[in-house]
Length: 355
Image (cartoon, rainbow, N blue to C red):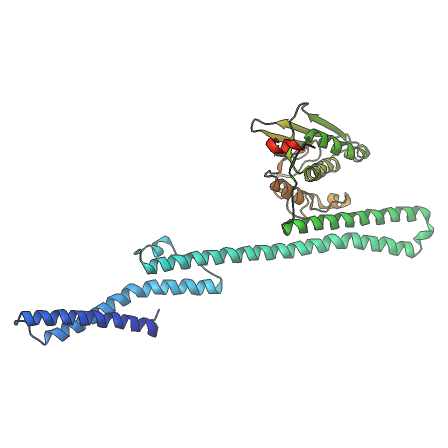
């Protein structure tokens, strides 16, 4: 890297200062020691200045060049942090400056990567939303057009098509609600009202509300909760949402004659472990880790047929995260699946207003 005019002026100033100091010292020495020839004073001063300039240039050139390369890379968005051997050096101002440049480059790099990730997510999200909206809308339009083209006269066809229109309208409504929920989560508006409540009562309510669906699918619901569980701390309505989603999925993705077991037990860590287990079709191992991704479906055709939006487990994950918990998933193909999470036992002020 070629030095600029300012750098050369600084080095020249340093060299002149060194030459002047050397000349003064030699002049005084020549005056005190007559054997030293006078002509050697300016020569020695000039050599001292030139040597100082050369040494300073050699010492600073590589370090300033490295700093400039780093700044250029940061500006272009392609920063590559220098290796440790390139950042090891004297603990001086230039070293501190280089460290600041490296840290700034790393921050910019992280910001750019996060921006790319969010942009990828935005494109994928919009594409998925567009697809999810088109499918029921096209179905409703197709059934309506068929009815208007003369199928209204056929009572059996008319009844069947109206049912299908209603099914797709419900699916659109569910998608709109889940999208609104995701929007609230993305905007940081997922608020929790923490209180003490009976998990057993809530599980019983969810089981009772799901019983008609289970009966229509010939699936047996069982609640295997210990009799004397303490109250838990959490947002009751949000945990209802979590449980309802897990139990609904366990019923919908089961088989005729299958069973769904809703259980809870107290752990030694003063947490209550909740589990929803089924003996249904199971989930392929490569899909388990992706179940909480937005719009991901292990079985796309069946999920859409059941009216799923592909957002339920993503919302469940965020609700549990807000409770300091995680969704745990275990599954074996053809043997069933178990979904679980934990909630803390209510203590202190939480017990003042139990629900």
